Length: 230
Image (tube, rainbow, N blue to C red):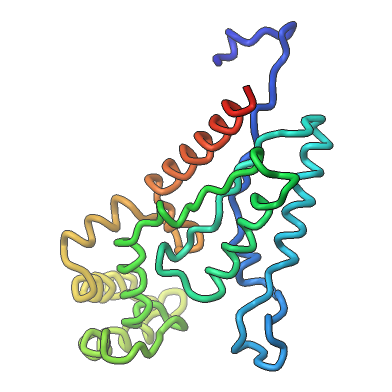
């Protein structure tokens, strides 16, 4: 509805509420499921489930809409190949929709379906191959040859990155970075990154395609819950 079409006399209707967040909770200080195993155990995210259920009740109470349709965008970071804690967190995030009091008016949208798997693989390659200082990982043989090829360039780049002020050779840094990019990615992959990525993984790599598909799915879930009320 446009601003011109809005009629103050008719008022408005709150049709639904979309909830889409969770990464900070995923990596937050939740306790282990098995205290004896400590960090080797998966995390117990049951408190998140409880608090999300409280949020749903509070939003409905504050807005005076007792059965307000509530769509939960279940965390999609990492895509379909989620690690253990991501999988556990997703289950905790989705849990309120299965509660008796929320049946039919709270729905889950599994946003992992919209994660850009190609961008995810390219980001993994960059981290594992050593493009980012402090994020270099030993991933066995998969990226060993790539790391070896990049090592002398990366070492030179690290030294230049530590230079300050007038001593900082930006042209040389840009040249080395481009040479590393050319080792890491084909021209087609670089073009794909330029067109689709603008941020880090926890922000879905800033992919407008991902966010628009998530938004559409959340809206459709709310529309469907309202349709079933009629």
